[in-house]
Image 1 (tube, rainbow, N blue to C red):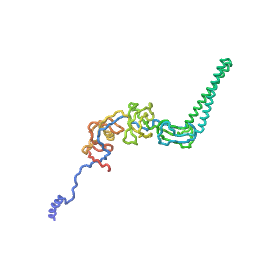
Image 2: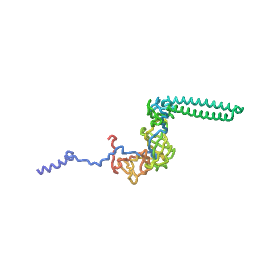
Image 3: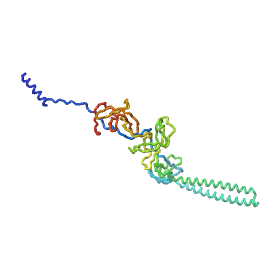
Image 4: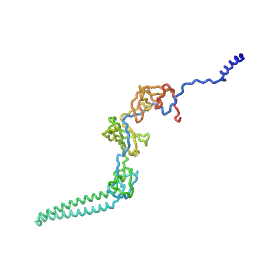
Length: 365
């Protein structure tokens, strides 16, 4: 038996060499770190701008809240919300019956005062002729002059009353003060309105020019001036940059926030924008075309400044110098050991160890 066992040993070794025995595991290197495509960026040459960020709400530069100037019931409404109107166009009519009667009465009173003044003037001319002929005393001439003065005063008072009555009658018709769009009509036909009421008959806005009422930090006032260009965006038009200019600057700093209010004039001839939209932009101070990376590629705690570049699938550290910073575009200028087309890690991938092998996962995984 011992001799048989010794003879079987070479056979077992031969079988193992030929694959007939247990498998020998292959040696493998360290696993690659999987990186999401959203955590990598390509260094590119783009236009960056710097300047204070301004944010706020778009408002119409001209807004008219047309409140009733007479008391009465609304007889007619000629417009609805969203209707375009021209300057002077009637929008609504308030009950004019009483006002029309008052205007007619004032007209008759004015006509009577005119006739009285004309009669007093003729009396004065006759008195002057009679006084020169010695037919009347000087006292009678003075009385005639006083009568004319009183008649003229009554005539002027009647004219003023007639003008006021006509104005009141005209005020019963609510008209658009300028060309624009009706944004609100908070009343209905039959509603009784009052000059002391809070609600307007209609609200008209001029959408051709809007204003961005925004704020900037007080420390940025040195870069803010009237006429400066402002580029901003609104959520309703993603990817579209809109141009405006600073029209006014509030001279007072808000002590609670340390912000200064600025007013940016925004042309809107095509009416693509609407009042009430939130907008965020930047006052342009400096602009140039540079190599840039996302702000998320910057490790704020790295000393000296550096980026984590992926070259040949391996993570390496590259010393760089940061320059122009564009908060709106979320990009920063880089120079030094980096070139256009290089791939860098961003965001959560910044913690990938140096020398690690990385592999980009598919976007849908």
